[in-house]
Length: 333
Image (cartoon, rainbow, N blue to C red; front, side, top):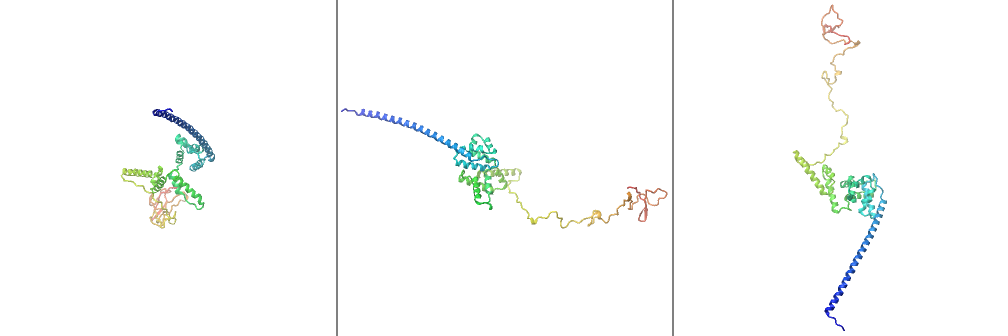
């Protein structure tokens, strides 16, 4: 029976353990490399499958939506496209690329004006299209307030019409409850402003209540500065005066003469009741028979008394009171 010393036995066991640990490390390394290869292969398969699915989704979306016409509403058309894209599970980063060829000439211009990165983002493209068409938060809020129930139409379509208007305005799929509350607050605040402020703030298209408050403060500061420079103090915006209409029963009749017209006064004698053509105080009219005008008024034009031994063909004898006169006359005058 051989005898092995303890020190030598310990050395042999140590060598065996090192060999086992080294073998385990090599096996673990090979297993990691194998797992990495398998993972890459699975990812490649998934990418290929996703690419095929995205390709199929693009084909399905393009087959489902028609070409946009100039008469179509851009907001409604984009809403229909979004519904189809979600149903076909089209990746959102491909929405802008898919919808671009189907838009009309006006919305398509947005893709040419935006940069490549902005044109690839669907939300950016949609916001720019609606902004150019004048559709903003205030316009959507106005559409909600303009909604009215019509008794001549079915109730269910009107309900969904109001629901869609509210969803477009509040956007519950994109905004949080706090953001929707802020939008409601901004609308109530804007409608309480005077008309000049409403018009000025509405042109800026604020997106939050605090932004609207900043615009109002800027407007008031500018108006107060203008008033102080003019020496009239701060100017407060006022509402336009109300337009009151007189009832139809109180309107005065047109083309009606006054009840008591002023009296007619003669220009010649200054007496009321007649005009100059009918004045009784004017003389007799002149006689113009045969182209001659014989004066019947008492005027001593030539001389008085008798004219003996003279050619009196140009004189006519006229009796003036108790005396005679021979005024000159000229035929045809």
